[in-house]
Image 1 (cartoon, rainbow, N blue to C red):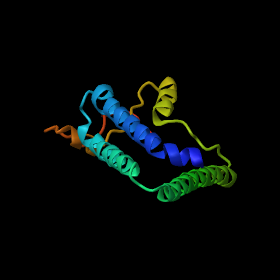
Image 2 (image 1 turned 180 degrees about the horizontal axis):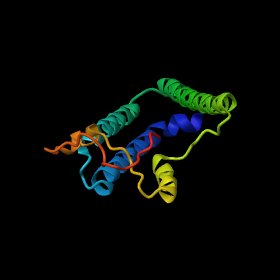
Image 3 (image 1 turned 135 degrees about the vertical axis):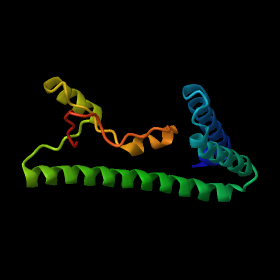
Image 4 (image 1 turned 180 degrees about the vertical axis):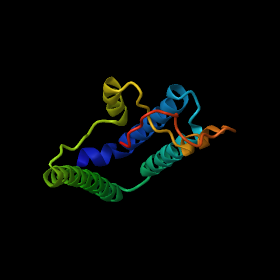
Amino acid sequence: MEFLKKNFSILSLLISFLFLIYTFYRAEIHWGGNEKLYYSSYYKISFFLIICSVISFFVKDNLKEYIIIILFSLIITIYVFEGYLTYKASYKMRMYEKETGKKYDTRYLLEIYSDLKKNDPNIVIKVTPDDHIQENNSLLPFSGISNSKNDTW
């Protein structure tokens, strides 16, 4: 605990800068600057963390110890809750299999489409008009492709 109290400010500042650098990488390099609105909240969070890290240099060791305890408690609580949600999801899958006698399908939609396409080349993915709204198209489709089969997955 003594090591954490002494190095807490430096570690938190380092982690905050790494978070900022990763956010910059994702927003500007990976997406080419096209997702600035999405990543603006991440920029705000990283700047907030940097400010808190700088403030932590001027905080007494007593308060640092409390902050460390709260952070570790919060992290442990989040991981325990994630474990609970994972268990609950697997429980629901087991209950579905028990009640229906069918195996729960965990494949992605694209995997299902690829498998169905092998059996029936005329199958298409259902595309609804609301899929086109964010693209600023002046032309919106009323329905899918004519005379084609589309399963409701």
